[in-house]
Amino acid sequence: MIPVWRLRAAFARRLSDMYGMEVPAYTTLLEVSAQVNDEVISKGGDTGGLGGIERVTAERHGAIRVGTAREMRQAAQVFAALGMEPVGFYDLREAAASAVPVVSTAFRPIEAEELERNPFRVFTSMLTTADRRFFDAGLEARLESFLGRRELFPPELLDLAARAEREQGLDEAAAEQFLTLAVAAFELSSQPVDRAWYAELERISAVAADIGGVTSTHINHLTPRVLDIDELYRRMADRGITMIDRIQGPPRWDGPDVLLRQTSFRALAEPRRFREPDGSVAAGSLRVRFGEVEARGIALTRSGRALYDELIGEPAEVWAGRFPRTEHQLAVQDKAFFRYEPVAGRPGDGRRPPEDLAGLLDGGWVSAHPIVYEDFLPASAAGIFQSNLTDEGTRDTTATGAHYDQQWLSGVLERPVHDPFDLYAAQQDSSLRQARRALGLSKDTS
Ligand code: OOG
Ligand code: NI
Image (cartoon, rainbow, N blue to C red; front, side, top):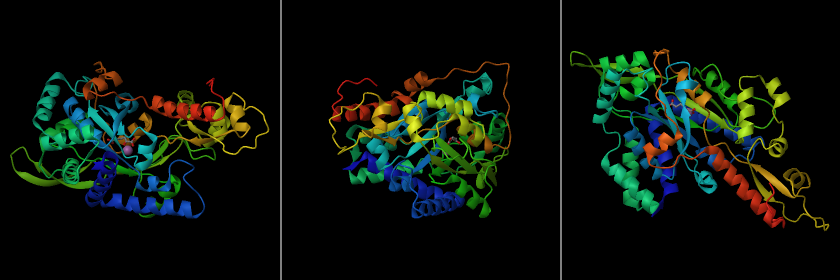
């Protein structure tokens, strides 16, 4: 029996190999990331306690885009077979200035041990066809009919996925078949693209065309994790790869790494076949898929996140004045999440440990270990989408947008959509409870 975490690790590796064949610049990105990570480690640096180096080396996130609720539910089934659950709800329609008519979630493992085994996550976006600012009723109907005719995930794949989820793994033969079909579902299709239909959608939004203008889905990008993203940015530029003009997320500063910093190289022209209005098939190209890289930091609490949202866009000097400068401050001000451990062998001088967290930390009773941020940031995600659009698209600002939210998404997926803050908080709280119990502080006053 191959357990789901092995399926996840194998899927991430195979998808990465496939994408490397399709987009050679991605392979360059992997090489440079590996080089930078090796150098950080060999210079005596580390991951900052943010996951083991094996985890970081294997770590990727992917992005896919689907068209309908049915496709979204099927994607959730495929990811469930890999131990990946929907976490968070992102509405990029508001976060982006250009037309990005999608709402999204991230499929990822949620347990600490599972994340350490392989943290593969996939940012998954769904086209908001009901949003009248982008699609009028006639176009919505034509989109729904086009999308209703296509099949992204073959029935055999969905059956195997359901079995893997139910039995928490697959025997070797079934696993092989599942992985083959799952990777194939995300390959770039060689089916001709209907030129006129694609162009009609592209006038509204390049993202809408990429989703609704073709008969399959494809991996849009895969993102390795790097320990020094500023260094990576310089080296990619040195190799002649045009990067977007900035690193998204918090500035580089000398305080703790928090949340997520990301950058990407521009989408490359890829050969695609087109069906012309006269029925003939011609060669052409599309610029849709790009490469992205990220550095991950500590997960912030709601109040830490509120402060981050206030400071985003401010230079490092402003951060230095307003954002906690040390992990210790982040912990005692309840701005970031940590796993707490009782310190073994603390010389017993008969004193009782203090009740409060600051006292426990300052007295050396417990140690704090940062919890890695496993999710995404709407502003960065919008920036990543946007930086790769050559055209702003159009929207009817007089129409009102359709409402989508996390509860709606749960209904679509027929699964709970987890709140990321709740997941981090549960991990922190259970570690603190255990630490307090070990110290003989049974009453939880935190
Ligand atoms: C997803 C863009 C968001 C990220 O890392 O924030 C994303 C997409 O382009 O489909 O991947
Ligand atoms: Ni991404």
